Length: 143
Image 1 (cartoon, rainbow, N blue to C red):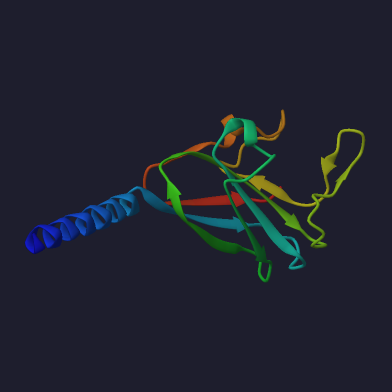
Image 2 (cartoon, rainbow, N blue to C red):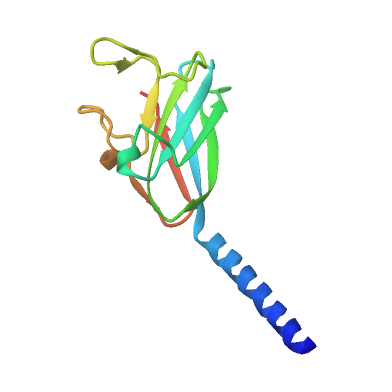
């Protein structure tokens, strides 16, 4: 009976550890480089979205990085396989609001998206989406 309990305990531990190592293989690291800062005031706000309906509304992952140079590099870890889009903006006055102006709310603080899409018809998840199937490096230019 004692050997049976020990065997059961070992099997349970191997199952848990096997599941842990398996889940680690399905998570990846996203490295993001953002360039073209016009000044080094404030912070960069980063939002990674995994669903079209949440684009520009909520983030699956987010990060805030102090701007100290003309370019900022950061990484977000433990991202599962899937489709993602990244939006960023340079919050120059660090007030947690993307400053806009005019009737149409055109941003006056620098912003950007993954894939660096044309902004002719505004941002979209479709233009910014990329597949995450392994570790990935992306570059975003601020507009």
